[in-house]
Length: 106
Ligand code: FES
Image 1 (cartoon, rainbow, N blue to C red):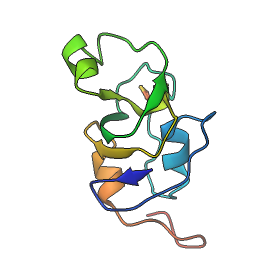
Image 2: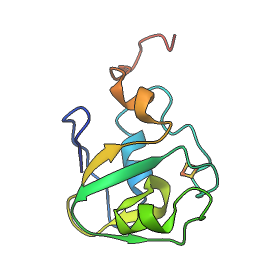
Image 3: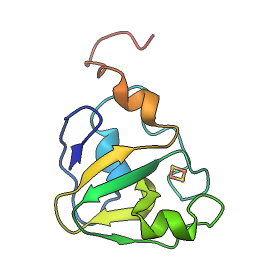
């Protein structure tokens, strides 16, 4: 997976959500949401690549969003390498530098 926002890439298995993989980048604030499609904070735009998806609430993902590959990272599972742009509430966390192990959290 590659984050278009920062150019960072990370591994994500096909049986784990794209959000779970992103959480391993070690950034503070990821994931900040419910991981279950309920809060909408993990919204991303998939720029390229293919994925499977779980049903997503229309309150967070409109038909137009879905048609344009704007989906919830916790509800999609990669089938091929994806290029993503974070567009939900996670955006600030993604743009922050990673917290290294042993470094204070605040
Ligand atoms: S983490 Fe809540 S909708 Fe994805």
